[in-house]
Length: 92
Image (cartoon, rainbow, N blue to C red):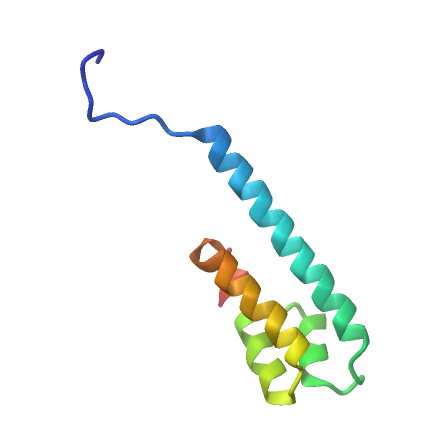
């Protein structure tokens, strides 16, 4: 209705751009995790979890437990930056 102020426009272009940026950041973090996993010993629980594409929160706990501070820092920053917008398979 022309005079109805209760309807708001949905900024589809802005939402699509934000989603693309989030997907790019997730891909970048996953690439970095895979690269860092190559530097870990073959029996590393963190490395094995990265290989099986475990959720980031699980990876974070394993990285802390093993003392892999670089991996833990990457994950903490990503989880903080992306927050609740992460897909379920990433944030579990």
